Image (cartoon, one colour):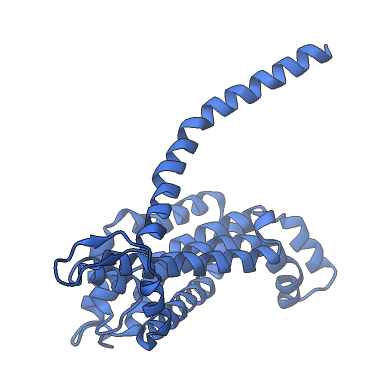
Length: 276
């Protein structure tokens, strides 16, 4: 029986390996291969006269990126916008997700989930231009364009990506724990601080990864409502298009990758990723 069980176990592992081989191969070629090509291109340069790509190793792009004060400002601005969007989405999403998971009836809960998902079915451009209309002079808000408009637009666009992970985390939270805490005399804030927040923190981290990374690399919303403000995505886009400097654009594109790796390393130290 032991040999039969070992044989079946090995056979199941072989089937699993064959099943995963195609998607893993696609991941390696399409995703990791694209990242490798990006990093390699960042060490090339462009002939300023002919515009042709010079495949000679150089640190010039990264030196310009590090020493240029304007690029440091853009990186800090981009990180600040991503953090602001994440904070706003968290403040808005948590009570919404709690109401969906713990206060709404099962039937109402399904409709609320559909309501949260519905904006994702609409075109990104339509939603961004709708905010442009609202923020323009004479619009519903009339605040004008700039970083504030960019943060508000991105916070709206990525809000479902924060609500759904928190909702899933709160749905897994047993109601008996909340009831037991209430029976023992714990007030609402203490229940939130000692039970709800620690147990849903991994879900918050999952949502923040979406909102932070999507905001960090976005450039369309900035073009539409950002006024003259620039973020990392705009620098990449402008250097690929108008400037025709693909190597420098690739060097700038490595910044969000490095920032996200640092962010993931930081949240990993909290242990949140292990509990997702």
